[in-house]
Length: 121
Image 1 (cartoon, one colour):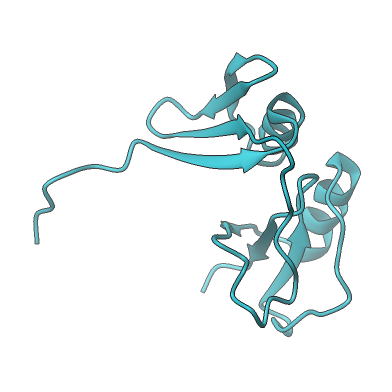
Image 2 (cartoon, one colour):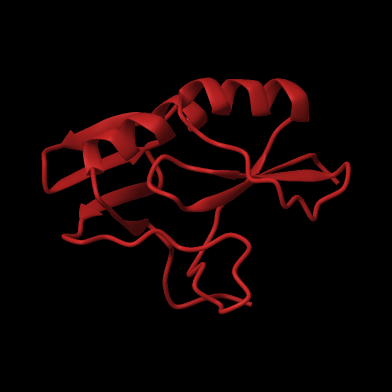
């Protein structure tokens, strides 16, 4: 099926756009293409992720029985332990609740958004 559009960008709320762009630059290896106090962006040359400053930002909860998570990234990695170590050194945290077994792990970015590192299927 052919769509009517192509996804070119996702924007994420943040208390500190530049810091969150730097975190995801380290995790994904993408280039920071814009960085100011109010807005920052990373890109791989095809798609971009933007980070917009929101006053009084409230991080989503994890786990989120109330449905407040809003979104999360699933990032494919070849080695869960190594990827976890690198993400933690970049500023992520690891919550106690881990529903993924041996196939994926939930981590929390510096702004409080959960994301998953996942092994290929």
